[in-house]
Amino acid sequence: MTSDKECEGLDRYLLKRYDVIRLVGKGAYGIVWRVVEKETGRTMALKKCFDAFQNSTDAQRTFREIIFLQELNGHENIVRLMNVLKAERHQDIYVLFDCMESDLQQVITASVLQPIHMEYVTYQVLKALKYIHSGGVLHRDLKPANVLLNANCHVRICDFGLARTAASMRPGDVAASVVFTDYVATRWYRAPELLVGCTMYGEGVDMWSVGCIIGEMLGGKPVLKGRSTMDQLEKILQLTGKPSESDMRPIMQTSTYAKTMLESLGNVRQMPSTGILFLLKGSETAKDLALRCMSFNPEKRPSAEDALGDPYVEKFHLQEAEPLCDKIIRMPIADTTKMKARDYQNQIYAIISQRRQQAKEDSLMNNRHNKRDPRLSGRAAKNPSSASARSSSRDEMDEKSVCMASPPQGWNHEGGATAPPCTPR
Image (cartoon, rainbow, N blue to C red):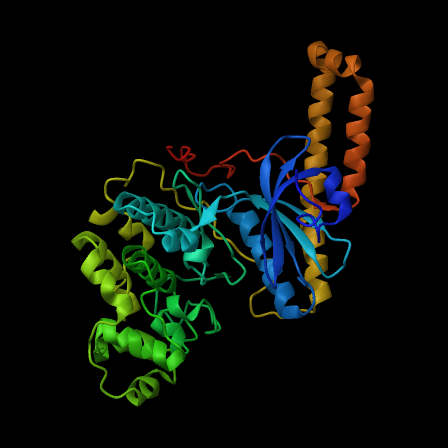
């Protein structure tokens, strides 16, 4: 039985719809509960986001995450957005996701990963990135804490609050790329082009993070733990060595500070730090893929699609569907447009309310179909009071609900690739 303390912070109206199993976590930005939806029996993660609309920056991040998750919904290795609910406190919002058991950061700390687990985790991350990148999206905040895991080693990538769309995924393609900000991702997983202030970059920023994650799984600790931007750059050079002029060229095209920053470091010797000890622990194929992903030159890093054919993950390659996204994803509000917090909030409510209306219309159509089927209508007639109670309860919930998401149906892109199979247990 869940204690009142564990339910503290949860709006009371939600207890009518969900049974709280336990409090999963609590931090400065929100609370997460594991809940069971009473009507369907589905287990989900219910997250209360604190101050999601307190200022335009937080509101923009909330808006982006909800839109991206809706657009990317359906891939086995991307967390599914189930529902969005209003909170009684106007600045907060509730979001319902897939319920996952842990994340990669916790699993690495527990030292329970065997080599086969590391290979399968890497494979699934690459599979998700292939889909994300082919939809014209950069995650930009990939790190172990954002790689969710179940006990069967099934991976789902989460947290798209810092994601961006891009017209081109080709690093250095100044004419076609989109201008981005450089302050993204946790510093330890940040690609050098971000550290030196490149205003245009591509999917290589996510592939650099993949290399950091592989190294961390192998060595049991973060590979490059810089204390500042300059210290992070120095640690990168200790791993990669000083870049040549040709390696610097794609970075210097859009960074006015890159050359000066690297020159200020002086002659950095290529030497192992404690984090780079993963080079002594992993197999040759693991080390090779990690180092390829962590090439200083973004043009030398493999794409997610290319990396899926790497010897390190070849035993899984093409054993599951590895689809491309069937569309280029575009935000309804341009990344360069900055709106007021209230405007982002209204946009979220309006866009997702449209989906709720569609769900209601679909439900109405189903009810009409059921009435034509005497077997289904007979069941409702046997217990009209319970049906009425469910209807009344649902109407009450709709007053607070922003998105009445239909039950997850897996692959839902019309005309898209074949659905990936369930992850083998």
